[in-house]
Structures are given as C-alpha cells and as structure tokens.
Image 1 (tube, helix red, strand yellow):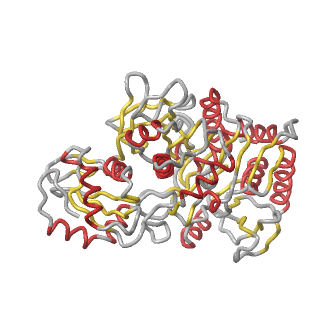
Image 2: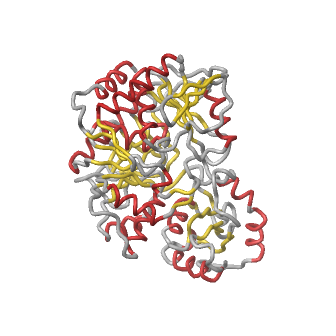
Image 3: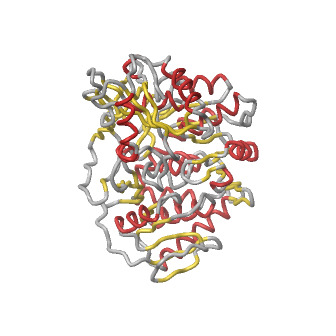
Length: 496
C-alpha cells in the first residue's frame, strides 16, 4: 500500500506541470492544475476524517481528481455507477460501511453533514456501521453474477498498478497520446486500463460526461452522438464493450466511420464473436480484444501489437499466468484481497475464473463460455449461451438476447430488437441468417419477444450490463413455456 501511495504521489507532483493532462468539452487541466485539485480533495478528505469514501459521479475531471486524492492518502474508494438503482446504491453503501459519499452538488442525500468538495460535488458524511475490510483495501468494486445482490470485490492499490503498468507496456508500440474514456469511470476496466494506464504512459485523458458520449440510461446508446464525440476529440485509444464495437462497425459499414486518429480500440467485458472482429478490421478499425475479471484487478490477457491471434483474447500480460484445469481458465498473479464480508484470499492463491477455454501452443488464451451458464439439452449436448448470444447480437436486428435450453429438445431466445418497429417475420428472417452459421444443437428454434429492453433498473441486468439470466427467464417463463408447447421445430428450424 505504501509503495502504491508513493507511486501516485510521485506522479502527481512530477515536474512537467505545463503538460496537458485532462480534457473535456468545456475545459482542460494541465498536470499542475490536476495536482492542485488532487491535493485540495485530499485535504478535504483528511479534514473530514473520511475513511471509506463512496462516489456517485458522472464522468469528468472531478471523478479522476477524487480517485487520485483517495489513492494519495491511502483511503478506500467505492465507485458507484450512476445507473445503480436506489436499492443497489443503498445496499452498497451499507455493505461497505462507507462513512462518506461524494455526489453532485445538486443531489439530495440524507447525511449527517456536508462539505463542498469542489464547484460540482459535495462530500456527505454518513452514519455508517464500519465493515470489516481486508488489510490493504484501496478500492471496492461492486460486481454481481446473474442473481442476488452485488458483491464487493476488495482490491489493493499495488494490484491495480501492476495491471495498469502491464497495459501501458503492452500499448507502448502504438504510442497513444490521447485516451478517450468511453466507459463509466466507475467501471474497474476504465479506471485501471483507461485512467491509470494512460497516466503511466504520460498520455492525455479525455473525460466527457456520459451524455456527451451518447449514453441514455443504463443500456441506451445514440450512435450519432458517439461518433460526434469521437470526431470532436480525435483520440488515439479507447476501450469498448462488444456492443459499442458493434455500433461503430455498423456505422462504418453505412458510411459513417470513426476518426482516423484511432490507434487502439481495446474491446472486452464480454465475448466478441470472430465475425464482428473481422468486420471491424475490414473497415480498418484497430481492434485489440482482451479479457479480464474484477477478481484479478481487471485485465489478464490482451491481443497487442506483434501478438494478435484471431479468435483469442491474447496472451497473458506480464503480471499474470493462465492455465487450464478441468476445462476452466485459472489465473495466478495479482488478485483481489477477498469479497467484502468473506474470507481473505491468500496472496499466492490461484483464481478459478469460472470461464471455460484453452491455451493454444503459442500461449494465446481462448475463452469459450462460462462454466455455470452452460446448459445441457435434452439430447445431451452442452451449449454455452454466451456463444449463441454473441452470434445473435452481431446481427443488426438484435440488441439484447438471452438463450435458454436446459433439458429441452431445442433452444429458445428471449430477445429485444434493435429497432422495436421490426415485425415478427423480420426477426424470424434474421434468426434464420444467424442459425445458418451455427451447428444444429446450438441453433435457436424459437423466439420470445421481450416487452421492453433489459435494464439494471428493472433487475434484468447486472450493474455492469450483463444479463441476469434467472430473472429474465422468470419474467418471461410463461412465454418461454408456450414456445416449447406450441413449437415443433426440426433440427435447424426456427419459429418466431
């Protein structure tokens, strides 16, 4: 912890104070301006004796200044996504024992006392019941699987810096000088692979608010706004989830490409089908797929200049080692300290990821699905739903999809169309097109059309946008059962 705090302090107080460091639509900070703001935030936190500081802020320079201030004084940061529901936020605040919350100045927060942190945000003191945190906890990132309340993953600053350092080295041949944050800063991937790695690489960081990027709510995206943002700032690098990559690829195919300044579009956070990567590369998009998980402090593997293999998530970064046990990927190297409220994880522990895959003869890692999501059809075939869903989501007709087939003779997908005006016949034709690229046991034989998009607010998505499968299946159980009752597909056939 001390070593990490010293690293942040040296970086904050570096001599090149006139170097542009943060940029957004209405302004910019030099290194000196950022350092001054970080020191001011740190002074306020020390004066208020805040120990576990939660934040619920939009993307912007204030988020980064607060995070670096917390790193500087060795306190605990709990970033809460702005799209958390009130219940999710309340759960996280109580669970982690936060004694302070930083929120927008205009926000209404029930607190014991409040103090301005800067012109845009306020520090609220909370009546907290302290939680037992593993020694050395620097960040608590909330993650959840497909069901249940979010789990707090406790991470040390040294682990975060190890991952950021590996990424800065991996992208050094591309020499990215400007990174655009397209994901919420409260997402561990953007925090570590975007902000910290960019700082270590001495790059400028662009931090527009999420609305300027084109986000609407938890799952909506306005693609023209996204393209305008990219062309406005002309970044060298950005991090994308698969849906953002699909949006940019489809826009490029329709004659609206992103700027030619891009050198690295790192994509992760979910399975990316090889066909989508090939489409993006055909447009000249510099896509590099990676893989990681919160328990390993974010990125573990990354395709990078001089080491790219189609269909893989790249070789392990220098800080990590990956091998396969009983078909499951296991990772050694920097990792989490433990789940909040759980046992401490030994320093030499190996993390069983829950992801199925293999490592090829040249050391490239291939992810084929999640162990706990694999279902077995009535014909004894194992099917990874993420694989089938990724194929569906590469088709322009489908925006969201969850595939089910446990102990059933065929598979059913619950879908939300990209264009709600598409009729059932159009969706059936789209499904036929997808099925032609799948083996018969993995094909989707029937569709259930959702009555609204899946969102975190209605409990159908996790905080980081992954489907809550059990919740979705429960919501649409009657419709799914009806498909099995009224559909009589043959292998490879479809019914919408």
